[in-house]
Image (cartoon, each protein chain N blue to C red):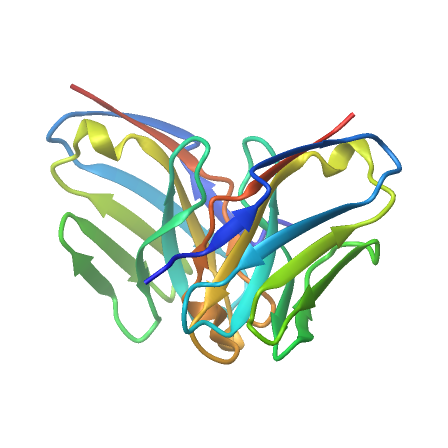
Length: 114
Length: 113
């Protein structure tokens, strides 16, 4: 069984640019959630996708957007990057509808904004 | 507003000892309480989780104790080993979790040989 995978591993962007991060959910999981983890902090919930629609959202501005594809993989897009967007971005998948209860995290993408 | 408060921020325990990490929550709608372990450069890994209908859950050396009336829960690591050295996060969610997991700020645990 393949776990959650994310790409790229690391990414460096400059302020104002746009970035797309990718996530492949664990086999059999149909719900994907994205989190932002700043250095030395716990992860913060960005949003969750189920059946290709946003199912819930945390306190993040609209420049954070996402997609889920029919194979349950997902993308996180961030527009107009700011310095404070530098963080580890984590994707987590869940095995059932609204199944955030049991979430399995990927290794993350380290984004640095200069 | 921090909805899940975790303590201590850092903890040093001798090998073979018991590591105890505590969390308190404010939102009474929370009904799922997992603990995650994170090593540097890695994503969080689910260790153990509990729901409010039980007061304790044990899996191997890891035990969650849950006090619903006090809105507190804790992780106990028995016979702590150097390989347990990591950052531990408590978390909580409600209603099937469409609002995501709310995490504590983490505890950096060091097990001294």
